[in-house]
Amino acid sequence: MRQWFRIAFPKNYLDRRNRAGFLFVLPALLFFGSVFILPLAQSIKYSFYKIAPGGASKFVGLRLYEKVLTDSTFWTAVQNTIQLLLFSVPTTVVLALAVALGLNRITNLKWRNAWASMYFLPFATSLVAAALIWQWIYDPVYGFLNYALSFVGIAPQKWLQSLFQVRPAIAAISIWVRIGFDTMIFLAALQAIPEEYYEAARIDGANAFQKLWYITLPLLNAQIIMVCILELIFNFKIFDQVYATTQGGPASASQTIIMLLYDTAFKFFRFGDASVMAVFVFITLMAITLLQWRIFRKPVEY
Image (cartoon, rainbow, N blue to C red; front, side, top):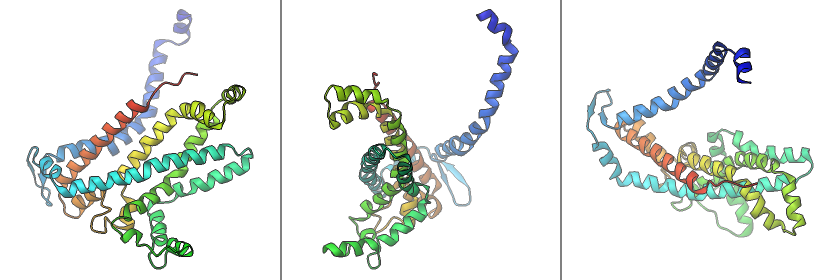
């Protein structure tokens, strides 16, 4: 068999095939390197330099790291970001899974696709446009939400102007935008689960909750991990919704770490400090992602 393979596919053919495969992926590698790897390397480099607005730079070692990591404003932004994560990520994952389970029970394919399309539409909307829509919904005087709440006797709320309501209000925008994308992932995974598992469980007398807990959720383990990681990254880098609605207000109550990074770099022109924040974001996301993958990843025996 090996001799026939060498005769049919000589070494030069394999070399040409390998070179062709490399050339096919080369544009993607160049794009990834120029858009992600190169800026990351520059951010790491600039985090050790104090850069003047005119372009002059001075090596300062770890002084910028000490300055940023001991700044109360920086840690307030980190705290706001974490609170937004806690509001949005678990809610988005649970709601998306619940919607996917409901859609999977619809036997009519046309109706299932129609409902799935309606859930997916917000994801196709620009984040800025979605934020502006919700800004109108949250308007304390003319907003639809306060108008609807007035029918049940709830007084008008300030929402985006409130120190305590602004973070849940922004988190709701992220949930509305992202739930459709996560639903499509879960729905595709649900449709790939063999029906024989449920038939065997039905014969053994398992109820609906037992089938969900012992069959569906374990077989969706990989998709749940992937969705959690994607939502974690998306919400940790949240910027558009904040910039379009509150710009970090009121009183920096909604200022996230990316919002602070943007202001530091492009409003105050402290590029070295902003580079330290960018390195912090990268290391934090990498560490949390690897930890999440290590803890929740477990093999599923069929």
